Image (tube, rainbow, N blue to C red; front, side, top):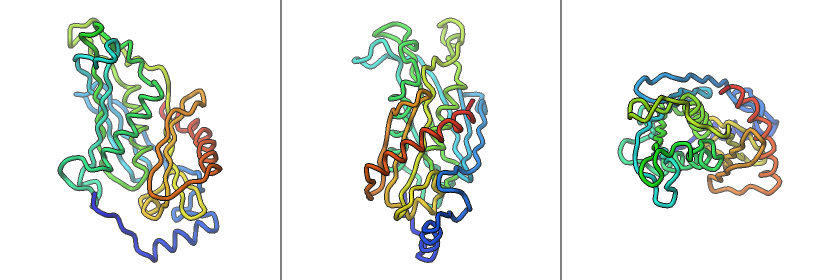
Length: 257
């Protein structure tokens, strides 16, 4: 990804507003932009979803195939997550092999799904040690205006909830819904000077010093965290972010249904 820059005038404006508890777009520090979720958009996929958070727009497709399990988990299905930053989505996205930003995005989404045990991978075993269902979660960023982590994770969760296992197509019986165990939600906060704000826009991300992405499940259990950017967060700030994440996740979970 090419370097992202922001003018000193715009940076100063963001800092000045935050010093009074305000944001450029008028939101509260813990307020998300409007979120829309559509599912079942891709006929060729077993599950799909499109999520918009403000102007950030992503689409996620889930494809399933039959293959061999990993040697250390012979009785479990396989999860593979990939993210693609389409050059048309942002002037800073470049064509070619996945860059560190795309790799980090895919890993954070994958870890949140995996560590929350959202999918019951044992129920995706066909023949132990021989055949299991392999899940390919492919994420495409269509428009980038900040907070890709939450948009992509929400899209992945919505797409998995929309997924039907194509058993009939592979002569493995009748189709059935993706076996799910938990309902994780991910929220991302950034630190700008002394302020902590959620769902950062692109301009806010450019001036942020630190970022923390938190994944929690429907039981209020902390499942995964990812620290980003070079700045530091105090223990009290981390605790406050986790607490706010748990509160915000309830409304976000209701949006997915």
